[in-house]
Image (cartoon, rainbow, N blue to C red; front, side, top):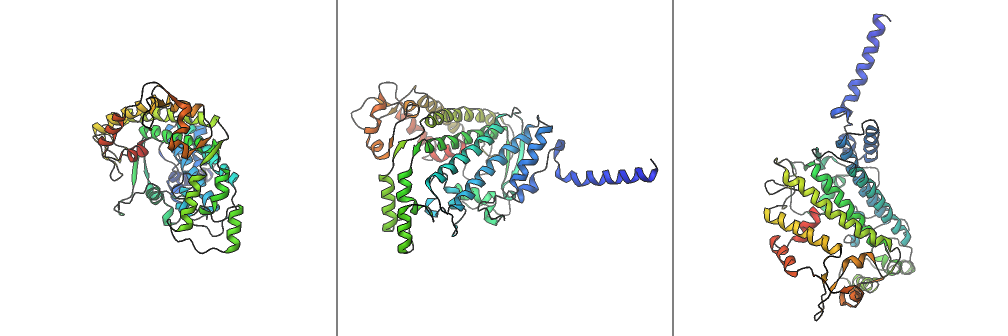
Length: 417
């Protein structure tokens, strides 16, 4: 080979390396930031999966892959909701919230009840894929800074990333984070191994909720009230309304909207359709508790303070108004113990009607489910098959939780799972 040929080969190889270098991170790991910024989640997932086939021990890439898979699951759920024309009035409903937040769709396709079940089933399957990826991580010393401002999610499925479709905006909308943030400072989160357990716990929480929804048949509820939540539902009532061209909906407490809400409450009498899903729900909730303990084990061991998602008592969170104290950490662990005892049937939920000393065995509610009637549960008679003598969960312990968290325990629990 002559000198000129060697020089040409060296030039070609050097150019290839120089071109590929910006696309690779440390250790040859793909740099997914440009893809995330462009909203190319599928492409980011593909390059990470390909990298892991050659480098199966790269747990940081696996953490990134699981995170991207989680984001893709949310993106697909949102796109499906938009395609079905979810109304803003449905923004308080599980699984419809993200589609409602993405905006209306005047060209909404016809939606049937079974379409909604398929939507929830697919979302659960997507989340399960993300959790399975994260569950393979062994390294407990991972660190990854993610700029929420530079992650695009095509929430409405139009192929373009609008300003409102960046993760920082979507996150603020879904979490009702109204406190303004300095827009000149990007929302960068320093994810670490504790957040792997946190994300897995959230996956199980979402899957448990999906199981609880899919376990029951909501067909009658859909047939009679879907017009209140979708632009183009395939129901007889919606078709009759469409033919009469009703006046524009004016607000939550306008008479027709209020009557739909009352009808929805009346129709929350669901036949059990897939009882095994309630047992899966109980199993996933117990797993969520265990993963929360693992997450806090690593959180409390941290001695740095770097862009914390969930801080320990000596750290600050990048999220406004999320503060943690030693008392709150102790109270949270006490709650985990109490929740595990209730879910496992070792403690009973105090019955809310006066004169009853027995408690409700929530473990049996989930593992031996029956048809569900919301009104009868509120009234109490639906709980009678699950009443039994035993050790009750202390009302005092729940009151102390509210005191420690200054009445915001539910918000804290939703955040740290």
